[in-house]
Length: 425
Image (cartoon, rainbow, N blue to C red; front, side, top):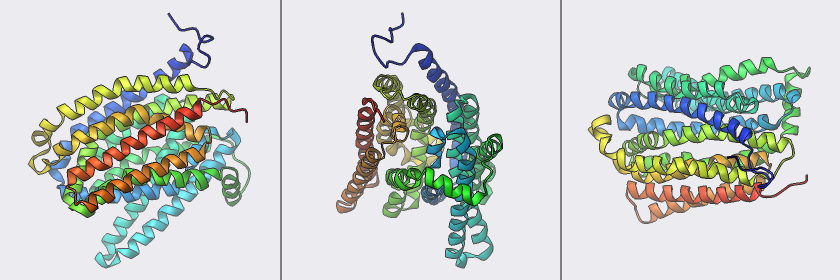
């Protein structure tokens, strides 16, 4: 028997919740399939690439993620709420800015590494620039499909990206670190095809490209000016742990940590992404209809995700460590030590982070900035303690993980406050 909606105010109606559930289910099936392909290939990859190479690759990817975020200018957030007439100029502007930042980063990298060999530095720098570009565009494609609530197409992309990435890295193993990066380029290029197709689908503005860029930047200035700095602050504690581990304990340990992250966090990350897309689509649709009071939907989604998060976290902590050496090889024995603390982070990521979409949808940039500062402060304190007391690698990772968990709880609480108010403007 269904709960009567008039009794519980803004409680999610069965038909509306069914749309979210259907989208989440299709995305979860697709991302789980992609995860399984990736996990099936990972043991072969770890026997072809040693921890040292993985450590260098992981540190490079961390820096590329930061640059990709800058090149996106977070216009993907504007895609969710923009008018139909603004979408094509918005997409064109996003592509131009991403290309510009990627080219500049590629050029700087080539100049900085010119002494290591002209041809190799140029090729490596081109791959770095290309990876920055496709990573930025990948987020744009997700926003487009989420806006339209095309969850079936989004599910296909969620499956294809990790599968193509892993298989590409396996086939290109002879190129060592460059092979890892080219595999990442192949996997993330799928989103570029979606964006290029969407640019043609929306009506042109009739203005020159330069004017479109200026107009879009003026209209959606909050994305690069407010949300981008806040998200950069929040991204640093997520991407820089592997860099810190590399600097403190060497590339080999960083490589072990990066594989532990892949094993422990891949499924939670994919699940979180699967839930965030339909949930943000539903929140955005309701906000566009001036229905702001969404406490019930927020709490319902949290409780539903908690039911998934707890068994997944326990499974990761108990079942994975004993199979690390038989599956990945004796070189990767430290991975089993890193998985248990990461399982706690996986649990909180699943049940608390998807609701973070409400900060952008409700345009509560100050609250988002506060949550970002909390995340950075926790990360800095954890690293400072590790340096001051010369903590071991496992202790460093436990300290960083605990800071992430505290940040997740604080961000979730702020989101609950936001959706519990009935805004009139």
